[in-house]
Amino acid sequence: MANNQWNDDNLNKLLHSMPKISDDRPSSEILERLKKDDRLKKDRRPKVKKWIPSIVAVAALLLLCLLLPSMLKGNQDMVSEPMMENARSAGKQAITTDSKAESASVEEDSDAESVDATTFSSMDIMGMKSHVVFANQNNTFSLNLGLIHEANVIPVTILIGSDRVKADLGIDKPDSVELYKEYAGIFDEESYGFDNYHPYKGDLTTSEKTVIHKLPENHGYDMAPATFSSYEDSARSTFTDYEDLKVVDEDGMPLVFDYIGKAMDFPLKRQLPYFKYVMPSGEVYLVPYENGDSSTVTEALLSMKKAENDIVKEVIPAGVDYQVTEVDGIAVVSFDSPVDFTTIPQQDVLQMIEGFMLTASNYDVQVQLKNIEQSHFENYDLTKPLPKPVGANPIWLP
Image (cartoon, rainbow, N blue to C red):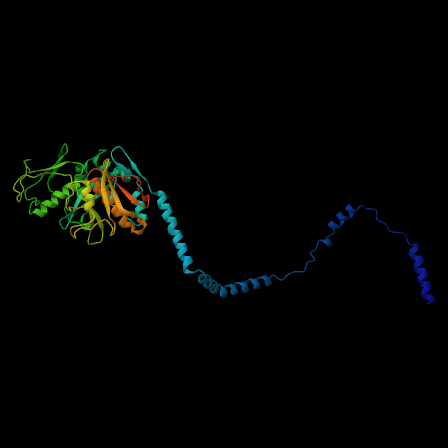
């Protein structure tokens, strides 16, 4: 113990006798020296083996491949049929809204009512076929043709682009005869199910408001009453901007028809009510058809209620009845009870409205409908007189 104590005392003395160590350097200088010390620059963090994340990624990918088919099937099962139907309905509604926004309203020009070029396209999108043509529609010229099917005359309106007409004819406003001579021969009637009837045999010229038809021998238009009737009604549906047709022989003399026994000049105006004519293909055309007394527009509109034979069908839906009066040159069709157009097939409604319009136009008047729950039907404003068509059953010329 003594020796240890001595040693401790000696050690104490030795330590106290040693000089004191001090460092007067500023801390900034010490920090700067430490930054430069290479021993402190070594990365002391433990190294992670790089192959471990790769294994984890591969395992996750394999698990995803196993679970993905089940997940997709589950998601499909969660989408119910009503939800799918709602999605389809929303898409259809969007298309309908866009098409209605593009539809044009009926306008009036100095000669007759005209409709914007989008009219036909909007009705196609809505799944309905329009049967009327208005003046200056679609920037086209209209060639009216009385086509023949089983001895019945079906009027159609061939639409031809105005640029094409101007290039072909070199004139701005060709009449029906000029259009007929240029285009009737290139329209393919048989492709639409009609007889090969046009162009007419012989030559066509005009004199004021009269069409002069010079026929060759053996023309065949007077072989029987039915053949002459088809020829007569076809001409009336073709040359709608003229008043009379005069038939002459090759020498320019009045032509005597065999079965009639005398020369035949006749007026081209055709005042008849309109009905539906259904082709064997199922295609529907609106046609003027004799159906009792129709010397006035009122009689013609009333006679549309019931067809007298099965060649044509009514455009008036079953259960719909009406009366007709004439007010200030407007034919007013008043339904006996309020009519809700939404309860009637829409194509039937369109055929009835356009049948009224075409019938009234045959008498050079407009028609207005009364006692209807709706104020509009597609492009037609039902609160005022409807526009007057200049043609029926439009077909574009290829």
